[in-house]
Image 1 (tube, rainbow, N blue to C red):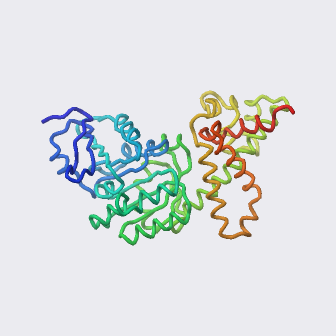
Image 2: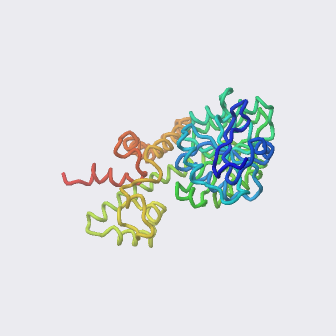
Image 3: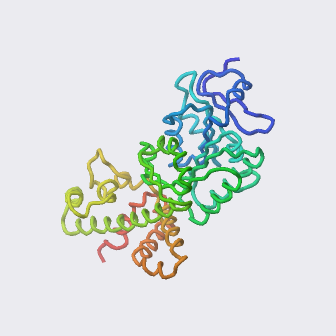
Length: 363
């Protein structure tokens, strides 16, 4: 029987593991099962704003042949959207398999990438012995598994997950990213990686399909340490850029002129040149979230989360925490934005708008 393009076929129905969406003309479900090879299949868990773009590039740009592309998200609408946005190119297109749980992903794919909101979701997805990846490995005693987690999370949580995965025989790499949604969409992300160097080398083909640069930072948790310190600096520079842009306008300068001066001078940084927080500061061809009422981009609540994680890591050494006075103030500001419904979901450059409304208004 020939099924229409994109039609679902239940896979391993007795266990209700997954649904296959053939991205070409499909034959019977039995043939789909026969074609599926775990060792040649890739799984992706977490299809949020970043994950859906990363998964799309992994599906399209991974160089080696893929038997199946297995996806999972707690939101069925995210799964449906991904399937609908990636119709078949021809009858040889890789089938998309929608797994019912992370454990099902582990049973179906030997390489798994995760992009999740926080430490709590990472612990649940990886360590739940019933529905998590570790449960899937235990069920089938599968050892030849590579897990790459790009979530920004607590360093201690990352090392705990890594230790338990390695104890089960799997390989684990923490690989948080820099580049935001635009970088995820354009496959220009930078991956900061922590774990055994051999695992880092093994993950290169996967990472290269989703980004342009991979940096090995050392042992497990080192990639997260690098990401958190980078984001701490990013938050500081965004607030400083916002204050400079607001002050310049108060002194009579137009935002586009001020941005040209800053970006041709020693004050230039990513926050001024790429994601300038002032509306109209950059050319229309380089429009930023500020030109869209700060919609899209990296949410303020997520920046507040990352700053909290950075300072939490510093708390292990009270003396070290006392040496971060500026970062503590920046964390307080973003905590206010992150808890305010008017700012929490907008790009973190909306701190410009918050400062303008709270500190640059006439008294």
